[in-house]
Structure formats: C-alpha cells, structure tokens
Length: 152
Image (cartoon, rainbow, N blue to C red):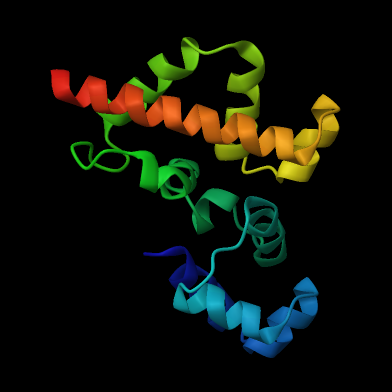
C-alpha cells in the first residue's frame, strides 16, 4: 500500500475528513488531498506527526527503506530492484567508503529524512553547501552503483 493510501485509510478509520485532519496538523486540506492521491509526499517529520496523531509507528505509514529508495530512485540503476538486498548491500559499501561528514549528511537526509535546513544548522554550514554535498554524493552513488551493477 502506498503512503497516500495509508494516510487516507488511517484518516477514514479515525472518522475524519481531509479538512479535519488538515486542521489537526496545521496544514491545508489541499495538501492532505495531494498526499492521499500521491501528487505529493509528506516529509519524514510530517510522517512522525501523523504517526503520533494516529497512535501508530512511523513504519506503519512508510517503511524507512522505502523512503530512502523513493528519494534516491532517480539515482539507482534499473538493474537493481528497489529495496533489494543487493541494493542495500551496495549502498552500505558505498557509504563506508566516503568521508565521514558526507556520509553523516547523506544518512541524516536520506535515512532520517531530516530537513536540509536542520542539517546545515547542525554542521554550521549553509544550506547550499548541504545541497552541494548531497548532489555530489548522489552522483558518486550513481557512478558506484552503475559500476557495481555492471559486475553483477
């Protein structure tokens, strides 16, 4: 089940309209609609708020690996199945071979789904620097996965 479908199901089970859920989360009804139809995805902080509101685990709304792989899907060669053990293993090897700061920034963004602003504040760098680090790391990841998939 997709994240939007899970949100809709939890909302309906709680006998709430989109408007009522929007009011509880301090967002617009239109945004709730976009989540439920798959036109937009909530960030991980919002998933945490939804989980708390519905008294479920965040993993009941979105699997962490799914969030990571969805965010990185444009950088993963088609030779890998999304969420496969081979992809997870390759990602772990890749991360173990990059410098610590870049690895930590990558993990905070793509595993913990932290906002770029929060990461920048933590490392006392500009948001543009975080974006640049992430872009370069994604390019390195794409190259690494392509070379790794050619060996499969």
